[in-house]
Image (cartoon, rainbow, N blue to C red; front, side, top):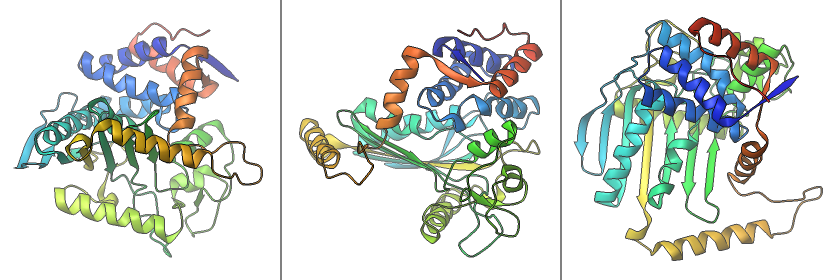
Length: 348
């Protein structure tokens, strides 16, 4: 059974929880916005299901609620930042702002950010480039959830990638390198549901429909077999080695309260009008999207979607109709309401 909540009410509630847990009000508001934006886009794996874990890490003082982000190395268009073990959403926004400023000055900006934490969905940071009429690319290493191809020990992260491209509407790709995000297994486990075969394997490397078996001792299945695990390894190699942060097998996960996560993020931005007038670029992107949408459809297919279109239309619908939250989510939010003495979340 689900209940409907209004986006504004949910964001106010989540922001208040973050504030009571120790975040400054502006940072609490931003963190709440990223979670609600994920719910609006239908990306429930990175929505309020994560709130309990974020708050737990703040309560256990393994995340710095008031980090001092600093530039460790300045190489013009390229820079390395230290996130001071801050909330991933907070320090990632600061790093993308730094990246965009460098792109304004140098036509391209690349920023690596070490000593961070889980930053939620990658799309909000890539989409910041759209506000400056730039193209953006964001990736990160994550806690180990994938085995190298042919192996059975999870050592690699699902290292998501987000790419934002100006257009009408813009393209906004946000994908992980696992068949599904880990959050969907968490969601299934908390609800006591089985999962489809192909989402992950157990400790012996066998496909499993038990989300607990995969979360506890197995690993998620990578996209495209060896290609997915290979891309994950390449991202992890560059980010961990170049920034001097942790590799995926060294990262402390969001549900682990033992210490800092040591996540490394990567942000890049391209100033489009340095090479081509923006209207010409948008026209070319729109023409490509139109060609793809209008191309012959496979049997049983009604529509060809561009990256981000499904999520964009879902956001429009949920802004109008409200966000559905499961009984499990509502129960978790009610517990947080009691713990922090915050008025209960309003529902329709």
